[in-house]
Length: 314
Ligand code: TUI
Image (tube, rainbow, N blue to C red; front, side, top):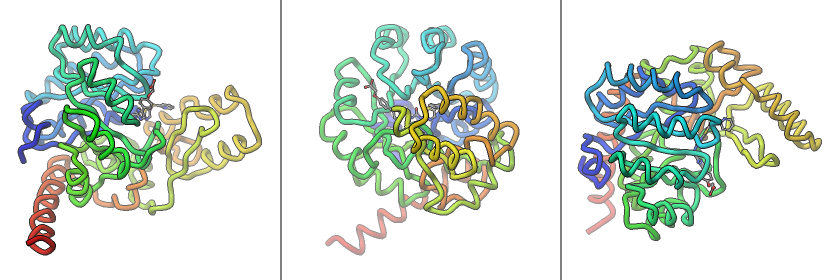
């Protein structure tokens, strides 16, 4: 498939793998890049030097381009931004903030800059500062989220920028890819579906919980703290939401979530840990390789687009 995104990055398919904190490490990122998409290493809240190691290990496993996600709330974000340059990373994506202060550094190094945005206003601003593309991420996504749904955000972003737009949030199969392309996106970013990839090194309890979840099984914590986060419902989310509704202060709530993503991903504690996943989790059941996921999604998207055009248009 040829789109503005495949042309920009010289990749085969316009599918990015989301930079999921604690999940998106070198095995996953390399597998997605080797499958023809764009693998992305997460920074999450990790220290800079640990992420540098992940970049180096990814490079040992693939010769294809891959990306690094800079989570802007990471206390070491400045160091990570410089590390991307030192390690010669091809593509940087950013999340959870406005990355414009890093643009001169990255542009000078020839790094492709693709920020995640949750509004048309920020998308426009990112284009003005020199972003190469933007990822419009909707409310359906897992983890830290904005307010707009993918369905309404993507076309509104597409209308105000002249750079390629990728859609993210709620895309888990070829139908989602086709829909995103119809909204004007030139590519997609997929997170939740890759949670079940064979190459994803998370605890099996986490994978099982995603595989068994239904459409209504995610909840959003932190609406009152200004850091809304979507996760699969469990004892932790119930406790958090109860405390939040009782007006608990920020510090108490942060204490409840501190280290909880690690607890779920690494230790497999899916009861008290944070099991981040998007609303599309209810559609994600199959365990497959990254290559199977990427090719299946692209094949499905193409056959649906052809079939619908033949059926509905004359
Ligand atoms: O960043 C994400 N998703 C994440 S980061 C993360 S790690 C974390 N863990 C616990 C608590 C908080 C974070 C887990 N999931 N997605 C990208 C994203 N960026 N979604 C929404 C945004 C966003 C929101 C507002 C980007 C920019 C923005 O504008 C801020 C501004 O300054 O204008």
